[in-house]
Image (cartoon, rainbow, N blue to C red):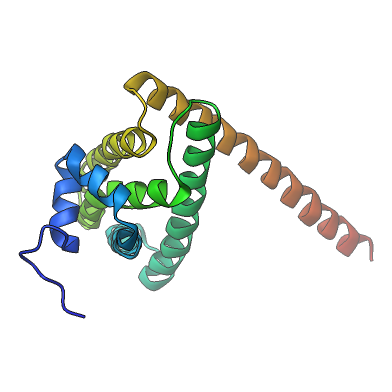
Length: 189
């Protein structure tokens, strides 16, 4: 399968357009059900770039990239579903889970700049700026996929963040109780 570098639907071209905040790109990938694979590729590329960009932190680069890859894929799937659920159920948006998955996958495109986090001194600044850029592209992706206005998009994101914090807190408590009991039981034996 050859990638056409001149095609408007090539991965590289779409990543640039997503990074340039082109609303039409988000509409395009929302409607293109075959773009899910490309969205996945963007998430993987960004996870790898992020892992390499953190290599200077003294951690094992391969372990960093693998851990980042797993968390990026899970995070992408969960965040897309939360945005889908909140946006369609509470904000009156119209979208499918796949539409959010695709648009939010492409919204990660500026994250390839995370690779420059490895540069001493300015790396953290570059990572921070790229992170803000990803937040902006994510806002546009959510707004376009759900076909809602800016206000409803902001509320969707805030409710989604609160929901994720609650879920992660509950999971943390459950794991804490399970592992805490395991430690207690292990020491009692």
